[in-house]
Image (cartoon, rainbow, N blue to C red; front, side, top):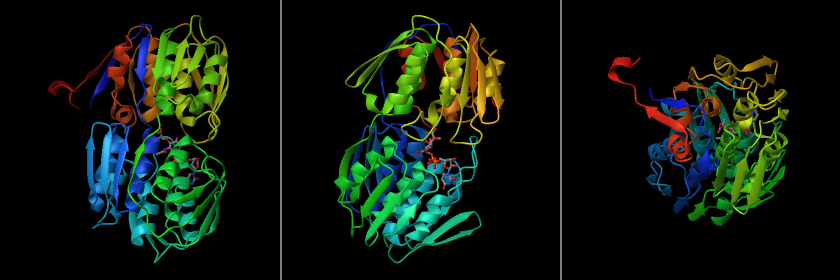
Length: 423
Ligand code: EPZ
């Protein structure tokens, strides 16, 4: 397994281009199943999860070509409607194929995703919504089976605003007969991006970005072209890196309107942030100040930035309380940060962080995508060398992160396991 080795202490300086959003590319790629026309998607990040989604579409029988950051998909014929466990266990977002498959082909068999490092990750709301649309849902041998002659529009209330649940149901309802109203829908920018792409292809969706979606079902969707929005979590991660190393970093090709909560918290911590069209510049001349964070569904502070901000608070002056309200156990980075000398402890669903003047580099273990990002950030600011192991977690959601950081002046490299140390 690859690892990333960082020698901390360099102040990051320069510009970094933000890639397309993984969490927008995934539902957009899944939605290509909904029609037979050619779909051309640009600004697609080359990250493991997106490549896995392309593989899954190929297993269904779609033709998929993914050159650079451009993907061309044609799903006019499908010869399988089964998403196998071996693939789903590597990428929970495979569940996003459930709605499109049953909506267009009348059946789907998708392995239950199972839990992951950050929580149990149930999909009960996805299934309850599909059942409301008339699908027969059964769970057997670890697989979800959904069947329906043709889905019928319905009024659905989601107990909690679920991002992929909203996406799954919006895609399914776009081909259902009649009108669907989805209440307490999630409002993330990735949902708006998916709705924009579906509407370009003939879907009739209103209210994306609000908590009430109205979808008028149509018989079929055409192909279409779409550019994926920038990744707001990658953007936040690089801004935190610039602030933590007391550098001067400008991120480009980003969407500042999606970063409001993140920018507000970085400013509250004492960073200087200037915004100009698709560019955001951050400097942190003085030591940052501790500030409290509470993760919430969009437009609240994103849970996907919790680990990165926890790492930043480990070096800030004073005590910070980080409250995680979205997932039940998204604190896998804490023990690893303590190995680096951080004064951080878990109290229920909160972290209590007392900033230190410095952290010390250490060998640490990545456990999930965003925890790994938090450890990379800590390594950039720590004294000495940090070795982050199991970086395949990082590769799921960050495109060429060590190259981008090296271009900003970080002393960072990826090491392949040598024969001697393979374990
Ligand atoms: C999406 O996951 C993202 N993944 C996650 O990003 C992100 O952390 C999360 O939204 C929250 O913003 C993708 O978009 C591919 P949820 P998702 O359904 O949709 C509960 C990353 O790092 N819930 O919005 O799985 C659930 O347990 C990943 O890029 C149910 O109870 O999250 C959680 O407490 C990690 N039943 C809450 O809702 C359901 O059927 C929000 O989860 C569905 C969800």
